Length: 126
Image (tube, rainbow, N blue to C red; front, top):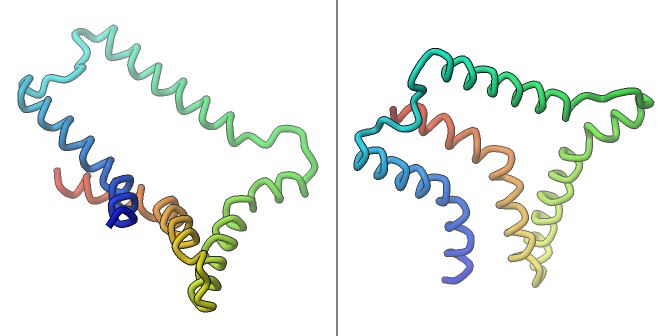
């Protein structure tokens, strides 16, 4: 039972947070943090642009060898293959470590599919 709760709680946290946010919007009339004038709207747009530029700089390669960039780009996919392969092997062999590998596999699958799926579901519900 504890394992089920520890698996479902992180998965349901974004939905619970949206529910609480929706409750507060309902209680406050849904105004939120809307800009009061054009100057504030422009400042918010500039902040979004700066945020996107900062995110783009994080992925910038810079002046490195091509193989370094290739290794850097392959780190996440290789980690996913290791985790999902480890889970498959632990289950196939009947290992006692299968629950731990299962936890890691759930995290990896949520990383791959969960965030985008929740985003599209939330957008479809509006």
